[in-house]
Length: 491
Image (cartoon, rainbow, N blue to C red):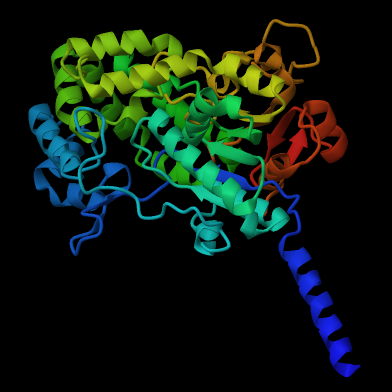
């Protein structure tokens, strides 16, 4: 009898453990992806000479060691000293070229280079990722992990220099691997900044697979940024604009959280800053001969062949940029690079259509855009609302946005911000787009109400529209953020 009872108990225990092992996990796996510069790049991968490349190729130590470069740079700050621009460009271009961050002429990854952290396993196996930075996509991943567990969250790391269509193909492999590992029918994909462009390319190529439950775009670069207008020689540096902009950042950037840092920059002195900016404006921006040298000797060897740079051009500016850069020999229209960037340009043209299509096919879509920060004073579009880097109208997929310092001439309505700056009715998906005022590009910090709210939008199982979210979380379509990243409905 004892043997029979023990056998029965053992059998029951085995059945119980089996049922737990094969129990359905009702949590949708989440895949997050970084933006430009979000993954470390290495050369001589897998060899004894393996070395990490400088972030964005900006090797400050190498710059400081170049005495000629330092001498000419210091002359920019002194109104009484004449800069030898040929010497400046030659030495700066050499340092940037030696950073080895640039792609090949066809826009490919140089031989022996790559990333080291492509994972098909969840972040429970890579917990270091969650504290990699105290801002950006690791913060979102950490908050999402707090809610659904690290075993249900994955990170898609990729070579951010390459074209987003190719990276979308690599993302497809991860989606398939995650579904196989978790036995889930669908996943949620979250893309920040350039990662949002990768997600848009994925949506364009694989949206018909219907295996994505929710697409989340945070400060997405899928529509480009006006700063890229510099590639059509819309390059303006005005001393007064730069000084006004720095003062503006004291309160607008992160709700004033970085006021001390901005003031430290201004401590160089208005006259020195005005002198440097004035020289750059006269001798580079407005001097065709030196401007051409600057692009060919400095910009081209730095990141001129990286497809991702070109894919940040707004759709409407693409042809002008290509024409301008082709004319000076910066871009070869017969190259593989041109084929790659032209391919994504077509994807950009289908963005609004694709967003509406995946929504119609049952996927939830969340689009988060920021405003309240003037554009960088580098182009004629310096008075547009941005998140410091990307224009609000582009990362919201079509919002109508007032010129900075002014209000729209439109009556109050369902999709009009109470401060009169945003009209979201022109967005591709106005019911699925949220706006954060005074939030800088991707700089959401861990533990703050702003980052927690974004995580809730990622994992929320209910409908993600402005009405349902307002009812559940209390936040409207338009919120403002203070220096502690607390968020308040704009009234």
